[in-house]
Length: 295
Image 1 (cartoon, rainbow, N blue to C red):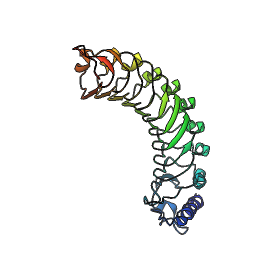
Image 2: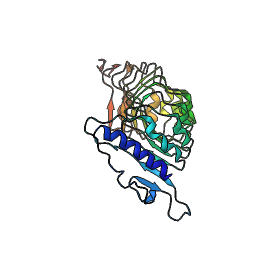
Image 3: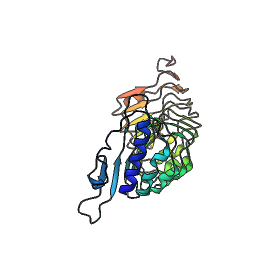
Image 4: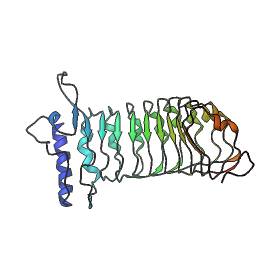
């Protein structure tokens, strides 16, 4: 375990030195002390007979000043040997692609890979980490479709894939994530309809699908989300009317439907939804109560 971490440090230093870049937080990593005493590391309880590394906080290891080094994904290889890991944060670095070897870290609960330069596809094997509760891949350059294997993440509570170039249909298997509290896919290139299976996500507090190319009508069962407080579907190509089931969302505080192709009347009950603090319907083809389109 210690050897793997020191190998990781050595690889990071080699890349950074070639760019004249500094590395932050790894100074305490040395062969003469226990890795449980190093910065950026959490180990299992000191009450246990054999302490193991369970958390690595490796965000922003390089200076933010240009030129920021591009780290090859092979730099991460030593970390895949630390199978005791439950939390891994490698955000705000500059890696290239996501290795399928993340699947080796079978105990992971929390995985943060935001603000890197990851490109290519999301390996389907990543969705086989059965203990994963938090996955954030936002602000990368990922493309391709979202694998139906995402449905295996049945302990997932927070899934965020914002600001990538993901395309195609969101698989209906997303409805298998029944413990999900936040689902955010904004600013991608997802198309086709909003999957009707989102109505199975009864624990959902936030659903953000804005700034994609979703089309067709808003699922009629969207109102079967009893806990949702933030629903943002704006900046898509959604058609049809506003589902009357939305009036059942008693915890809804924010509703964004602007910049779509919605039609029909704006009904009075929208302004009577208890607790609703922010409502935006602008730039659609809706007919307001004075019979003028709300554009």
